[in-house]
Image 1 (cartoon, rainbow, N blue to C red):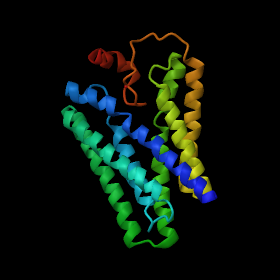
Image 2: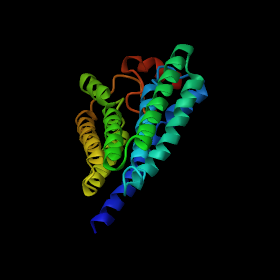
Image 3: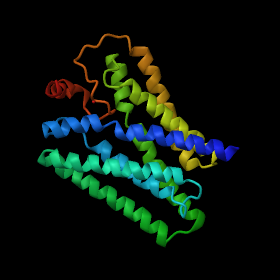
Image 4: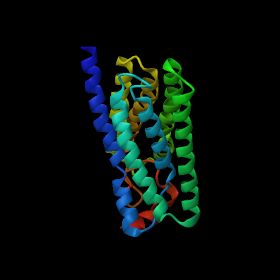
Length: 243
């Protein structure tokens, strides 16, 4: 029965994670339409790509048995994030293009090192520990990215840059994989997603606390991705869009 419940939470986790991976499509439609990355940052996409690559690798049977659902969704996420990164590089200004391209190269190098070391130098439980720690660290980094936006919400007393559904699915995704990790007795899945569950809950609390406060700036409802746009530059970006 426990295995069935774990499987169901894994399926639900896949669905909510897929929503999170696809949510930036609105941002990238805007980038392609305007042929400019404007004030958006490409760093979150590159770091999410690294998290997906490491988590997908960790979920493979020869690294971590019985975690194939971790591999399927993160493998899908890696493909999606790769497309985002390549589009961003294509339309970014020269200086930003070089920075993101360099970071993208770094991400591929880190993943390659982890994969090669785990295959040729480690075996059994040591391989799982090595890959698990790497995946957990970057999962926490990914979940921690909205902290700056949460600080902005408190400072401005406005939820304009923290969309409800984004916060909701961060909470649902983190909760699903947290329970999945607990049922599978896997701290490398449970711990970072427990962190994500807590941050998602805090975002929802902030949302309901500040949601009725009148907005002082133009709408940014299509800037659905947390942390992608610098709050103090949002008016300029929103003017182009007419998130």
